[in-house]
Length: 239
Image 1: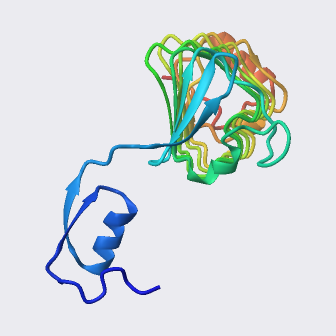
Image 2 (image 1 turned 180 degrees about the vertical axis):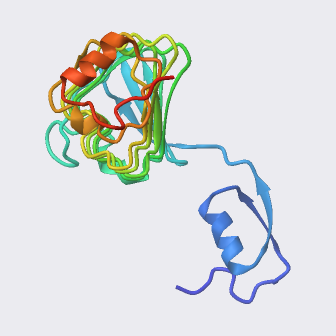
C-alpha cells in the first residue's frame, strides 16, 4: 500500500500516543514526534467465574477482578471449555490478579507464550494454583506467590522454559507442591521453599533438580525434600 503521508511535509510533527502503532510508524518514517500518554482501552472482557470477571487491554494486560475462584478450563485454544481469553493468548504480556480471587483454576493461563509478568494485588486472598495453570510459558522469568497460597497443583508451571525464580511472600502458609509442578523448567535457578511445606509429591525431583537455593527451610522441610528423592549437590544450602 502507498504511504498515507507520501510526499507530505517532511517537517510535519506527528502527535501520537506512546507505544502505539502510530508511534512506531512515525519513528520508522523519520517524522518528528510529540508523545502523549497512552490511555489503555479494553479490547475484550467477560466473566471467568461465578463472581470473577476479566478484561484484556490493548497494552497486553489481562486483568482478573472480583472474588472467589476462577473457573477450570481446557488447555486448548478452541472448542468447548476453553478459557475465554484463550484465542488471545499471544496478545497477553502481563496478568494482574485482584486480591479477592481465591483460586486460579486448571489451565487458566496455559501456553501464554508472550506472558512476561504476573502480579497479585496487595492483600491477595489466593489459596490455590490449579493444574497446568501457568504451564508452557516461554518468557516469564520470575513469579512471587502470595503468602496466602496453600497448594500448588500438579503441573502448575510445567515446561515454563523461561522461569528462573519462584518466590513466596514472607509469612507463606504453603503446604504442598504437586507432582511435576515445575517439570522441565530448564533454567530454574532459585526456589524459596517455605517452612510450612509438608508435601513435595512424587516426581518432585523434576521440580527442583536445578534449584540452587532453598535457604532458611527448617529440618522437616529439608527432610521431606530428601525423602522424596530430591537430594543432590544443589538441593539446598545452609544459610
